[in-house]
Structures are given as C-alpha cells and as structure tokens.
Image (tube, rainbow, N blue to C red):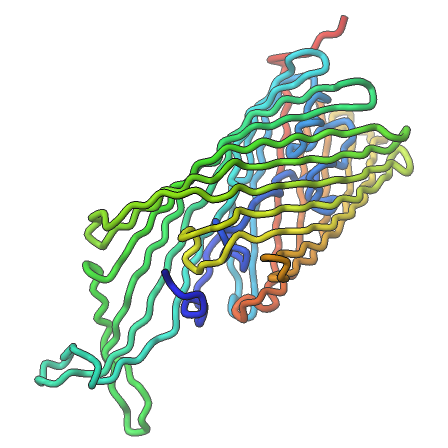
Length: 420
C-alpha cells in the first residue's frame, strides 16, 4: 500500500468529477441530482413545486397520475490554489415510473453513487550515483537519477433501484426504495525514471525520461457489489406545513480486487467485505403564503467502514452532517396558457465532513434556481450551487466550485389514474 503523505506531496493535474472529497473512500458521493430540490438549499426531501414530486424522495411520487420519464445532467467547475479551472459534465439521474392505483406509484431509476476521476503526481525522489545501478550514458559508471509515481483513478459505484410510493391518508404518505450497488474503479500506478546531472551551480538537470511502460505499470481493479434500501415518510402536520424524514442503509459492500502488471498478467486477486453506510435526514417545509414558503433540513451520512485496500491513500469514507435552508416563490398568474407556473428558489447549506469525529472538510454553499411547470404537469428546472471548501490538503485550499444542474420531468398518457 502507498503511504498517505507520499501520494499527496504534489498534486498537478485534476480531471472531471474531482474535488478534495474524491481522495476519500470509494470517491466523491453524488447524492444531489434534482435541480428542483438543489435550488432550495440542496434539499433531499422537498421541492419548490408543491403539485409535483422530488426525484430523491419516493414518498412524493404518488402525486403523479401519469407515466413519467425524468433525467438530470450536471456541469461542474472547480478551482483552487493549484487548479486554474477544470470543467466537466456528468449524467446524474434517469428514471421511468407509472401509477399502480389512484394512490400508489412505482418507479425504476439509475444514478451514479460514488465517483473519482483524478490524476495524482508524487514529488520526485533522488537517487545518487552511489545507490543507482543504471548507466544512462554508457560510460561504465552508474549515474544519478530521480523518479516519481503517477496515479490515475477512474470509475466508481452506481445504483439501480426500484421505488414504491403510497398515499396512506390525506395527511401521511410513504415511500420505499430498494437498490443494487455495482461498479468498478481502476487505479493505474505508473513509475517514471529520469536521468539527471548537475549544472555548474549544483542544481539538478533533467537529461532524459527513461520511463519503460512494459515493466513500470500496475493496474488495480476494484469491483463492487451491495444492496441498499431507503424508507421515507411525510406528514401534513398543519394546513400548510409538512414534516418529513428518510432513513437508508446499504448491506456489506463486497469488494473484489484484481491486480495486473503492465503485460496485463494477473498478479493477485483478493475478496473482502466492508461495513455498509447509513443515511438519515429530517426536514420541515412550510408555506407562509400560497405562493411563498421555506424549508429547513438536516442530513446525516455515516460512510463505509474498514475500507481496506479500496482507497490507495488509506483514507476511509467520509461522514457528513449537513444543515440546509431554502425559500421558494411560485408565480402562477401567467398569461401564457402553456405555462402553468414559474418557481424562483434560493437556499444555503453548511456541510461538515468528518472521520471519527475529526473535521476534515467544511463546505459552505449557496443555491439558486428557476423551475417551469408547463403543459400536462411537465417541468424543467435549472439550479446553480456555488460553494467553498476548506480542505486539509494544501493543493485544495480555497477550493471553489460551481455546479449547474438541469432536470427534466416529462409526463405521458401511457398510464393514467382514473377515479371512480
């Protein structure tokens, strides 16, 4: 295994879906994928459109009386002290659902769960001529050299799941989701050697890059498998207020590790299990007026444990505590007959990332967005989340990000609830 401090000495190149959070556990957790909810403080339980549903909360699906196709895509920008600007775009969510009865709904969906796409460079290490066994200039004497490792991480874990939503009575609704985690991460360790010499001032000079691909590369593949479930409920406690919560868990994560040398010959294979995560949240939504309201929400995530050999930095998965607040305004007095309503949203959040109660990262952000409900309860929403993280890594100090998310919800006439 690679020692933690050896890896992070020098971080030079950052790729898509990358942040300081990618350096822990199985990668950065993707849990926000609904622009309608992200724009009101990155909520998991509520949406700004009370007549619609939020993609992350199955207890709201029963509100739809037709077949539904939904999807979300995201565009990200990251900058920090060592990163000028990195742009990326990612698929976040796709689903298909339909009503079973007047008060019940079924949905199938798929979304990425954890992702890491990053390249890490270590600092150069110097080997003097007295310790070297290489003669670069073929003069019969060993020459000094320096070397470094380059690590390329890619892939992650995705989830496919099915959800059931039911209206219990006029004040209570229930949602249940069961899913399957699957995916592969690949870590490529490449070793580069450089011949060096000294100039007249005693400074090292690079003479040649003598990296040999055929013998200096190791590829580790991590295959993941587990099951998940989530239960969420909401209660109409006042005429215009809702109390909601969710609770989710994963089973033990099965990990199959295969290590290959540069010639792709299998070096070794290992299988083990990791204790699963738990996910909990509770929130309150209130409509102060018919067209104005706010949400308050708390989210708690306890990550995978005993993450042996999965993260080559030997970093475990991060725990998260999140405090979210948002407001929304609904305009429905619109002359255009094809547009039912327009929502304007604003929110804030404060996320604390910890390992064993030790603060690792702090994420303070603001969200805003607009949603349009048109025609037969179809909707389109755009959200922007902008924040700043305070990482323990110097390369990610003053890490700033912008996340633009587009969500589309389309209802069709394939399956329609028909009342008595």
